[in-house]
Image (cartoon, rainbow, N blue to C red):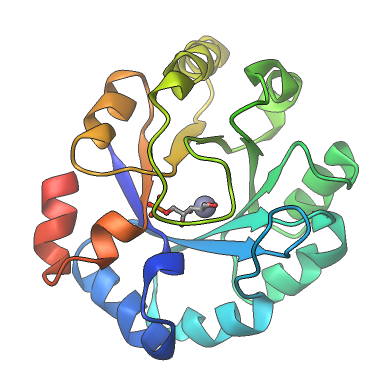
Length: 213
Ligand code: DX5
Ligand code: ZN
């Protein structure tokens, strides 16, 4: 089954609660929360206090994507703010194993992400410990960028490894996902679609989610 995770980075920040609720009503499985620190990526978004305020408006999965240099330092904050799954980057400065351990000990699910230039091999050694792989299909930092179709061999590589593992691991894609590129992602093995600008720029979220699905 395909799961859809709208990225609130593209939503109306003055109405975050309502935007989250509207997406739940539109039938999405998750809400994608993009946290940026202006260091790991060249942009600043928002942190745990903002996320905590949105939490009561969405009853399903809070899918937190940490684009920050030191995720280990902030895991407790995001757990307390209501994360269900915390994904961080294998390219970060924190110890990857210690960060996985910390997230798991908190009771949250854990995801690992790779930037476009990072090969699948960087994550494969951790595959049996994680719940989700996130393949970036743009350089992280900004919404509204063009989908990188050349990431599809990497998606295929992960699909193969996940199937071989026999484990229930989600394969998420993030960046430039729309009604056309979503098809390409799913054909290559992704099962969780993050979409920001494609979904939030449309008037009728229910229709937009249905079209994507
Ligand atoms: C990019 C973020 C994405 C972004 C996607 O750094 O991780 O989640 O919001 O936005 P779109 O769907 O507009 O490419
Ligand atoms: Zn993201």
